Length: 509
Ligand code: HEM
Image (spheres, helix red, strand yellow):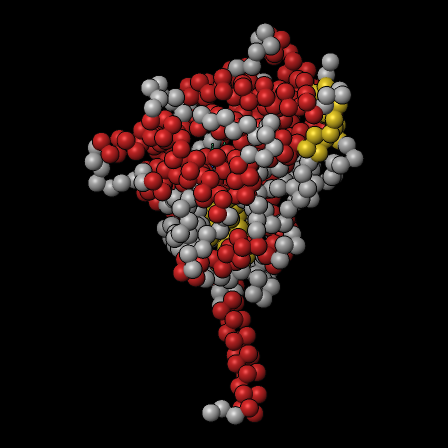
């Protein structure tokens, strides 16, 4: 038996040994960038360059942006995401290579199936890799062709009508304060529900729908999701699988799996093909069954995951673009007046009716939205993993398979080299001439290359139609609840404000 005094000696030694082991484990790769001669700053012990975001003190976007500025003049720099090295690109030529021209060396994002073994909604386009991604993407690409978007316009029209009705209700005395973060996300949930799934979500008028609760739960970081992410980043993802853990709250998995199954059931008895996203999914599955395909691609898992991602990736991003746009228009009254003039002019020329083509003709609206997406890109960074050894041109550096690469969209969009006076909201940056004068890789709100956002056209049509409806009917101003400047939520992976955006709306009579 070990005596008491022996224990007194063993316990501190064991504590020191395990602290040392943890330190060695966490800092094991910290010599990587020095060895390759890649510029970098000293990482904080254990947490690398992301101590602020990991502790919830600072948004990761701001952390990366500070480093981006520090390395002005360099084409790239290195960081450590907790244990692991990650290369951050500054040079638009390299950015374009990674996203587009050298796609075969960077065709995947970072997520791997390990640590998501029990996540029934993992197999979406966002996470799929290699050939499987390619096959699914090719089949889902026809979801938002111009012809389909035109066919969806009637459904979108119903939603913009409801949006206007809701805003008239909130300003029934002629004016009122509107939480535009909330209203925009309700509008985009209703729209994607109706246009892609043929469902009336009614979140604009029913403040407690499951759609909104499940939708918000996807993007609201919890203590559990933060801990699981941390475990993944320190290579303890296998423990997540071992204990059969899942990142999002249970209600999200139940809601989206049921939603898809219920929609399938309802469609069974319908004679007419709705030609929307769900009918594409049903056709894909039926074709596979009919052809007795050897490799089953559209399993229940893949179908439910993609139904989920079209909802989840679609609503929060578009809502973010709309609410930031309204915020900038409230702060820049001259631009708001000019935009209203042009919207009303186009509407007058088209008997007051919005159609897909009328929206496409609103050039200034396009410029205003692009400038919003420049200043406030909903996805502030793009992630890729090196899938085939890649030598960085004009350097001695070769990236090995598995190396993580970050493209700092937010920082490129705020770089004065491409956008002089970057904090100024100036839609004229997006005239045809000005757009053509900037290099590829400097405007990436939807990413680029084969993995560019699949919902881009739908998102633009939806946001522009919603904004045209609002701006033609309401004047918008900052109010005492408007936070200027906006502070970012340190725990969100999107460019989410810390507090919802509230603005004063006045009806135009
Ligand atoms: C303003 C609104 C939106 C923004 C700013 C946005 C932004 C993005 C970005 C930055 C990416 C990553 C692209 C890359 O890695 O190169 C992406 C991917 C994706 N987005 Fe969007 N998105 C929006 C709306 C939508 C909508 C409406 C949908 C679906 C209805 C959607 C579905 C997707 C999907 C499925 C992917 C993964 C594509 C793939 O890997 O093949 N997004 N989006």
